[in-house]
Image 1: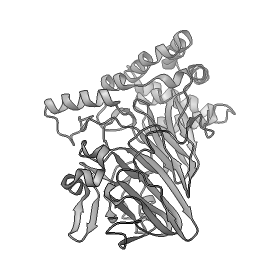
Image 2 (image 1 turned 90 degrees about the horizontal axis):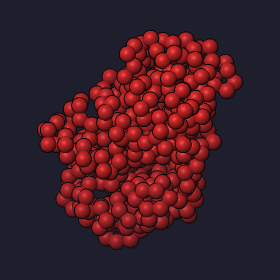
Image 3 (image 1 turned 135 degrees about the horizontal axis):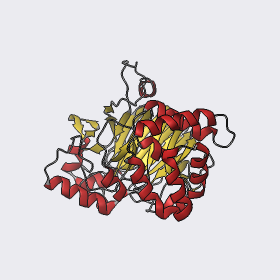
Image 4 (image 1 turned 90 degrees about the vertical axis):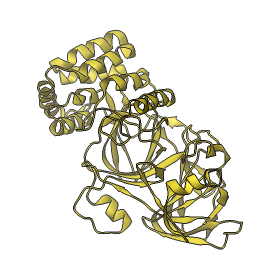
Length: 416
């Protein structure tokens, strides 16, 4: 049976004051609202509206894992995905997420040491590898993955900052093999404020450069916000990019990234594991970050922009993970049966209005009406869904048979 959701808002300093309230159709309260969480994570779970009143989706899943999650995910006892609206008014921390092996190892170690799951020094409050995908709702600016080494050398030489010259020389000499050591060196600079001041001064000069202007603007933005943070120097090695509304990007475990500005719908593994390099007041663990870091982009792997593929009435964004996929239904009017995908589902109305319900079964006569900013949850036992209405409706499911429908490509919104 499909049921309406009430979703918690996460307030972080980098959040937008207006974006999430505007989407939900409520007045802003003057404080940043960074993320709207849709799902069942221990840190902040959605509430399911039903005959018994409001229940935590965590409790709903715990009562009947197989009925809620389906056979494939019942053994985990937790939702495979977590969805978010993310509203970025200032850069997020420069960070990576652990792969499966490291997540299991570091979670077990932190549990053994008795670290508070919500404490500042906790990096792995669960044992899940965290991959994520964002679908831009406005222009969405980010840093994601390392530049190709040759480009990094040219960019660092154009900056001509003394603290960065050893990095340019190492990358020219040894290529990607030098990158991990150089990240380590940059994050431990002896006089980071001096290096950041020099980066800022040179970025001001290069803002008008036809090749490096965009990179210089990002460098100037970060240097102005974080004048004492050595992570500004590391950020220079990452790809700057901008997604237009409707474009999507996949971030794999170990891939360094920072979201700079804009609003997006994010779908990720149901995890809150974060290893931070900097650009934040929160805990930074350089040692763990270096162990988790994926440097393959610098060999030319490229940024993983995900192409949407039309399946029936949906445009489906499905990276190569069995945990999640995202589809966009753009409808004028009429009824739209949605292809069945095993597992739980979350619906989110971006605009317009829809009515959603089960195609068949004992609850087929029970429907949920969704307007802009409203959402609903359907357990695995619901089976196929149908919707009618007009506007744009997002549907979060498990992976489409675990195969990528839209192949990762070099993003065409990339900027030097």
